[in-house]
Length: 139
Image (tube, rainbow, N blue to C red; front, side):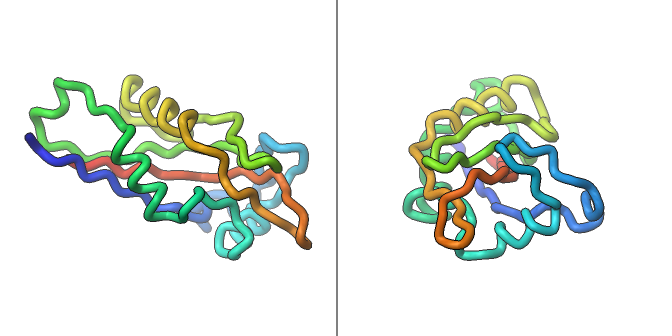
């Protein structure tokens, strides 16, 4: 059986593509892309409980690959956007760039299963913040 290698990189938004656009906020406040980038690089950004390695383990454990795809070598990335609310819950999950309807739905299902995150903070207070998560799939 081929081992699933799922890796992800929590990236700030692409510098060139969204540079001057206002973020389409799924939270109560709109942030510029520059503000979102600053949060993603800051220690006060939203975080999965246990950090990035725990998030990777969670995804590897819970992402189910369709039987048909297990038999071939495969590599792709699904780009998701969601909000990490003030209480750490996840809302408004959207596929920004998908690869296949079934794999996109599976990525959404895995994010919906995630435990509450540590929310972003600004000046010591929890805030709701949009978050971009690319899933890089390889097996």
